[in-house]
Image (cartoon, rainbow, N blue to C red):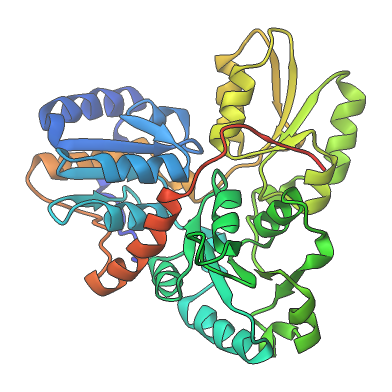
Length: 378
């Protein structure tokens, strides 16, 4: 990932109101040649200018659907901009307002490590191992996944992707005996349990240890091999938060993201992606109570949108994604100013060979059915 150079000094002196005015002016000037995508975890003032908002799956679909916009400004993090570049046309340019907006989970896995892991695991079992790469991963890892006959997934459709991977080739699946889930162990474990498997059907591959610290017996008993990675935001939610909010709020419905640790998901009423959580709260009754275990910007936005019901972040302290927070109005204005002047800055581009292999994995992700509703807790 590239390093973000400092903004020109005059951008630090622009007031918020002036930033808003100038961004609106640039959007009007650029017209249909520009499309701004905003992830749900972005701050409100950035989301205000997004043409479309969504989670990783929705934004990937929207990026692929853009046919007229020549410039896609992605207000998210680096791996999302990479995915948008892969699924968009060669004539389109993807821009990330702040090149330092990365993802610590994605950084927990690297392409060389995943290649080594697949080789090591193949020596421990004769069963077919199919990689499933969470969309929160680099383009290089997506490319390895595509070359290995695997697929990407999001938290909206991970169950559908797992079912595809485990289905026979004759039935249109990947014919996997085992799934290698990279890089979030919690998403893999929680999905496996939701599908009726036991926690014991999962083992963790530790990339810092030879053969992931796994034996042939460990691999033999496992259906799901989970890379040792996690989202630091969703790690903030603990079992004691669930117990505390239930004690304080009678009848509260606890809903968490499947990136949360297993013990939190087990205590929650349900789990789901950001889009699934948004739909569930919107469908709730006036007066209903919700404690939600995911990023604070999204939860606080839901609370303001649904003032007739009680909505709060599950934890007592904010759960903010510092990487998403790097996208702000001055950086957004700067890239739009440069576009208006005919200059592209902060372009995110994936080389054609990597993009071609990664596209296979992303196409399988986009073809997989996404669940509309939350997954009941278990």
